[in-house]
Length: 196
Image 1 (cartoon, rainbow, N blue to C red):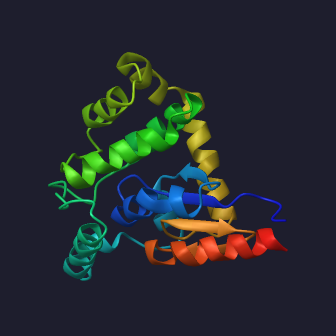
Image 2: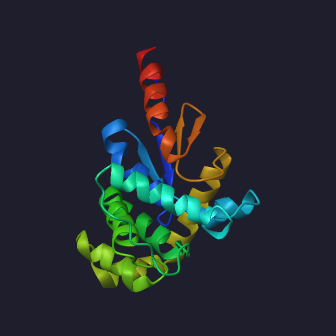
Image 3: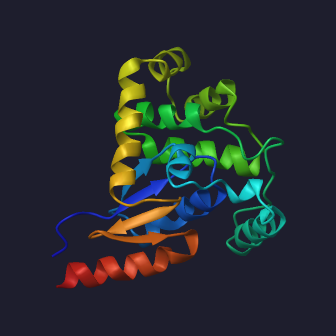
């Protein structure tokens, strides 16, 4: 049997993370969700979002095509995308403490990519919290709590120690599967590991 559940590292402002999150519960229901601050991961590896490169137009079209093919709806890109996911990353940790990580993360990402919400705006993050039943005042206060900030630093360090260099990444028994298009491969690897 596999000794550890798969780990799903994702970023709230990553459209490929959103695309993966929409189906990972079907493919890998046992996966442990970990919402990282993608900018930190990129910086450590000397990378940047493809949304800031010459690949932007191709990437936007690819995400739009995948979303349409999967019946997720038409993507409405945030005006400033890519933008900071710091508030969202902290809020994901707060939501996790309430057992609402999956719901909050999907809600925030759907707001970003189906409604064009800029998650760099704390008001949008608080709205995502409201939609899943989190108290706005508590969420805002907890997002500024030094304990949450430290927890996010530790989470980013955990992802980096696991070898994560981009999101989404699924780790199965130490093997990294990076990208929305490798989710099925990760699920197959986990099934194979669990069968041993």
